[in-house]
Length: 142
Image 1 (cartoon, rainbow, N blue to C red):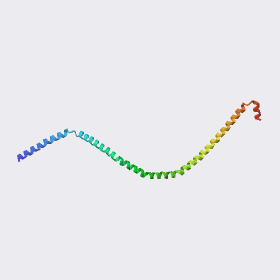
Image 2: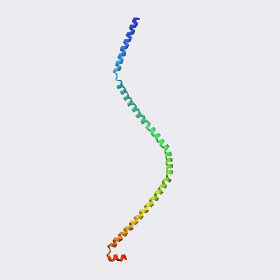
Image 3: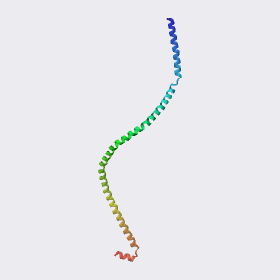
Image 4: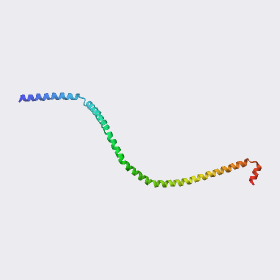
């Protein structure tokens, strides 16, 4: 029994030495550097896969987008026509109101322009009369 106990103690001591060596070896390993390196490798692989998948899916996505656009076009066209039909009478009424306002403004401007032309004609006539000899002016005054 004493020999068994001695053998057990030696086995325990041997195991402790082995574990100590393993712990020392693990301590020497730079776990952080390995993790960074592994992350970089995985990043490169994942980016390559993502690019491949994007190239693979581009025609599928493009096709679906075109199908959806074709599906929505008649719906949107119908809605636009409804909105135009709804707004047309409102805009027509507003346009007629503006036309009435503008017609009145144009009429006032035309009258003012005509009056300005008459004033200019009278002013020219007065200047011509002023240029006449005094005898001829006297005859005009009568």
